[in-house]
Length: 175
Length: 347
Image (cartoon, rainbow over all chains, first blue to last red):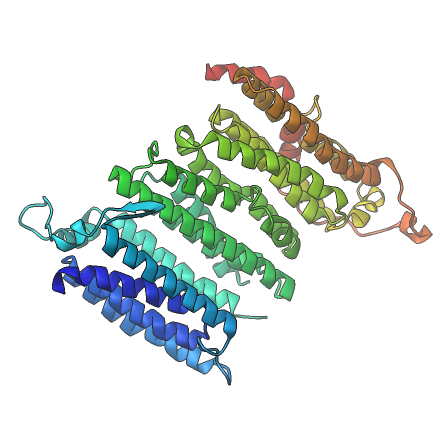
């Protein structure tokens, strides 16, 4: 099972995306978002990016999504919409799940599948190759590069996050 | 909006577009688009009425979808070419996705439905920024990937945009919606020529921005958003009324004025590439555009609309509204035609 762990995690990833894409109430959407975020972290971890996976888990899920959950809980309604409460949501949910299961069955049967992109089988995901970057882990080198050559990227992303906060404040000001 | 916040947000709008135009890495370009979109939302929402909220929401949803499509195109390009540099996109799927995303951001048909509704819901100043500055960033990316754009797709979008821009604007009396349909039609003309001669696209974009800036400035001077209020302008600002006359004719693309330069150059470039029917169709459909500009001119400067007698004897205080850079804008939007031979420096 461990050789196919990335494949299984990817399928569960897509299915949990279907879970919040069918638009239940935000509190349930946030719940599924946390689960899918956790699974995404697990996929990153399986490719050797231990630092990045843990960062996303801690900061994104443990910080930002928790704040999102609390604010949604403050603004929630009396009868929030679940996946089974509304026929449209249920139908969309089942359609999404079925499409994903069918695609997964295709991959298991044929070995490859082509929808927009050609997925050539699980070769890259099962045979773990560290790449040609030498003795250091690529992921750690990438993070180090972010703070040495990539200073402009840090400035730009930091400014975007600040602007995000300022814009949210302006939009919700209301007068 | 408090002045410090307004300054920061305006600076971010400009920074976002600058980052898009000056980056060679696809990720930075996407970040620039997102920064631009985030920062312009409070500008669109200056007035806190439901109409403006709805307009900003529509703008946000379409632009976010387009950014996602762009990111998908970038990722597919990364998969097949292995690098992030903005250059020729060899994979056709990536190229089509990027083209679709960028035309969605511009408001080309069939993704034009948001333009009139968003432009109508916001103030004149925000509409001006939306229709001029926001077109620069996607156009610059289309310029950079122009060798690899699928011509059939873009030409189809361009042709339908010119048609939509012409027919859609015919039944409008609200000035912001008229300018929105004018924007759709002009974007169509620009998109038609990108794959053949991208420099003409830049020429068209520059002249379109100058003309649209002038038009919006004149509308803001009078604070008029409908044809009816524009028709009362003869009494308040007779000089501005004549400016509206020549500016509308220039927007319509009539010969002795500079609005004719891009149309002429585009038709010339298209015929150099052995395309006869498409430029003919585009030129004929531009007449629809000219019709509603002429209708505006007619009601503003050439006739006196029926009005009550006290509207004919208006008095008011000395005028204090500032129209920034209005004289140079009007002169460049109407009198640049004799300078067209300067384009020969490109050879």
